[in-house]
Image (cartoon, rainbow, N blue to C red; front, side, top):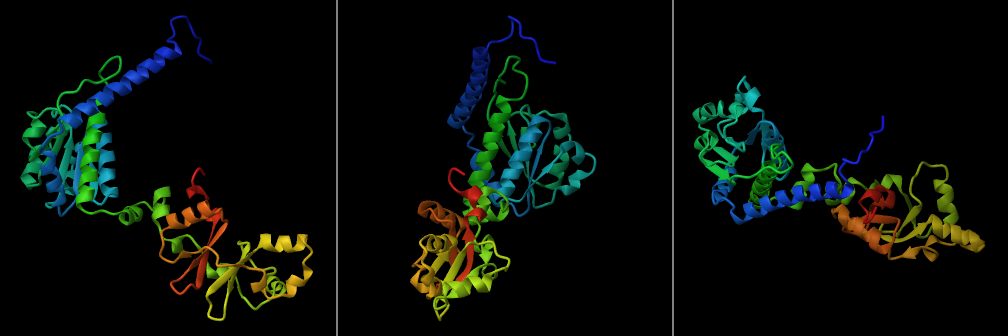
Length: 335
């Protein structure tokens, strides 16, 4: 049933104002954090950088969800990390913590019961704890080797009760920790691609040989062959590329001949050229990409040169495959 509007319903302008106020409150909290960033951050970076095991992230409720995101960020940027639910930890999952691990615990108050009850056990293991909390004198802080305290924050919204500003600040501290540690570990773009093979960025950072059509699926012809003979030879064979890779007697790529070239010959009634060597009608010195290049290089070449196909060649300029624009259409600018 459609909701009935009354004269007391908030107007769109009021809704937008409320939304902007919430964002501004959180932005102000982040500005305050940046201006008063805890000096203990350096100790936290060193502790994680020296960690021989994993960073075990703990948190309850909204802080737990933020903790899961921080753990995922650590893992994807070169630091082994897992999330541990404190409630489950108290019932056996403490065994997930190894002697070479570091625990990163999140709690705005630092007094969350499910979390504080496992802290003495973690201390008994001799595993260091880094805490992200608002209160440097809390139970959590007292059990921690490093305390990243961001000071008291006021939650935003009409009730100022739901975790909002505090979790935004927690997330910012966690992101800073993950990314600074990553830089200290000299984590590179190719490392990032290794952990993100399915995403757009990961595909761009992959190598061209990982996405190209192999030579076996391409049409390859010697430059002395005629256009007619080439198309007869490949007639009826399963192929998905509208291009002929033309090579010389040393198998070096010397040119390309596309289905568009064939169509133009038909339109111009250049029948004699069908029985001429393909080198007379091919496009010479085509653009190529070298084996071992990042896919981003191929994408940029296709986009900037307005190409539909891009041959992949080895160091000796011999064709090894082909990248079709349909293989990377989702990676093209403005696609």
